[in-house]
Image 1 (cartoon, helix red, strand yellow):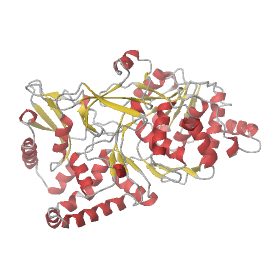
Image 2 (cartoon, helix red, strand yellow):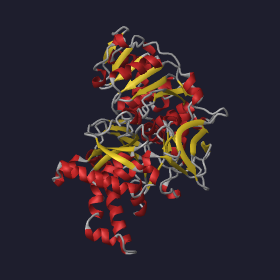
Image 3 (tube, helix red, strand yellow):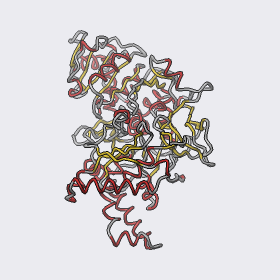
Image 4 (tube, helix red, strand yellow):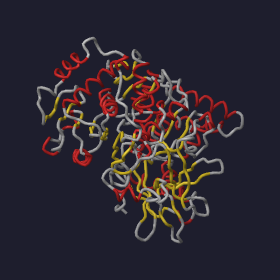
Length: 558
């Protein structure tokens, strides 16, 4: 447990508000709304008054649900600096899932965007004292005196409390140990079972500490925040680390299509970029693949020395597309396509892959690009913060990844059995992922324990590795490899219909192309990994907010 004051999470933001009072903190991208650290601190102080009027006490739960915006950030920071527990709810969750999380967590206040409130009414969440709009702070629904719980009343109370105004030196938050619960994050994994991760302030502080000490974030950092802040990955670095360092984050509330993001990158010129693989893979496919498939370029790429010129040109083009001023790009949240990763390493694109999970808020392993990140690896355990080992490795060194350290959760909320099952008897957190460690401590992910399949003679089959090969085939958008009752493997493929329409391909030709893809992939696989059947799926697979396919929805389709 980190006990020094410099690592105390509440004190980190108290210092940051004071030291960066006049600097820009957050901007709602596409609007004229920018808050300085001082303006954000004032909004937090007003929210503290609201909490008090609502009778919120230390360790009470406050839920927040909506798209990324400056009000979302204010609610989060106001909650943890007040001494309450924040319950972030992903905006993509359905109404019934949101209702369950609010009730299961026992949240007493709910801040929610107007569009997410549709389909919910106060009778469904009887313990909630007030529902407040994230759009403009208006009270949506009240179980309390409406005369006290509105923007005007809070503003009047603020003036009474601070008649001479609220200044940097007024920012003073109550002492709160890092052992206290900071958040309860409900997982949105691919297994279909959502659990509330109890994260102490220490776990959040561990991620912030790494962001600061590694130099990834610094005073004046610029971030384009498009990952959902309710997810641990975006929350830890785009938001918590950035504002701890005195950086400026632009919040993209719209769906992060490559077109929208490339425009934002060009305008803001971020100093660090956090992304999930899907975004980078789409940009790679649209920008890079058409170039390297042209006859002159594809030929030159095979010629020593000449290929360096082409690689340098492509790297510079890609760097400029992302704004041209970023130190590196960090990829996490899901596996990166090996072909894409291999090419980016070949052209020396400044990129590293990290590994984490909601239960570690989220970071477990990462090695910065300039420190020698390795192809296909997700780096080493965070030095001085996390430990990693492989549980019960097989003859190839592959086994379940287990971890422990500062960033680790204390358990699942109101779920003692799931908590017990998630830790080894000696206190290591079971990740449910398969991997191996090389002699230098670099971690290589092989797949999920729950998705690993068994071959006819008990061989381990990692469907994610086969899917990566299928996804590189022409006219394939994405795929899932599943196993039938007779143990034969089936590839469920969603075709790239935009590419198909542009080529004028007929349904018969599509079937032929998919069969050719099956044969090509099988030529690269062991006998026990062979794809027996290809089935076409009409649209994209349903995904979690971090863009991992919800595999459990499709297991009965073969």
